[in-house]
Image 1 (cartoon, one colour):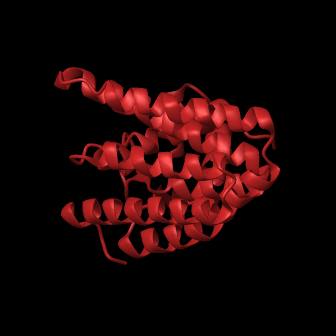
Image 2: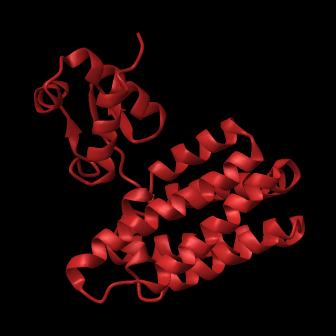
Length: 224
């Protein structure tokens, strides 16, 4: 049966936005009523989300995946292997227009970082815009690399910890550091320097891992 994308995306959004909390048990009937659909598309969507690691089955019940520090280490072990190769493929396979898009994307991130609002009521919207443009930056690199399987694997890995993104970017100075890391990656790709691009991506992922793991420890996430 073909999955109902709208139902799948709505349930995934509930998980990523923490409306469905880590560890919370899932009721197909309640979700179906909430989304005003039958239980069948909900069941199919939950199967896909389980394949992506966002839902786990315990006995006959399903619950939202709880991220542990051990899980995070495994996720970033894989991200380091895949994404350092992705930047190499981007340099080798990218077209002229792709390099132009990447240059425009990093310039856009730089402008956005400088426009951080001081008003606390506007900061969340600014964070969400930062996450959107950050995602677009990485999407351009994946498009250049021309490897959809690698992109899908990383997307599935990211969905398991992205609930923490706003908390991470809210850490004092993290956006500024992330911008410098992105600039290093972009400059190396634009300069077609594979060694520097892989080093820059590895540095970015290491710093991101350290930020996420520190935040998880502060909020007492389980170790394993």
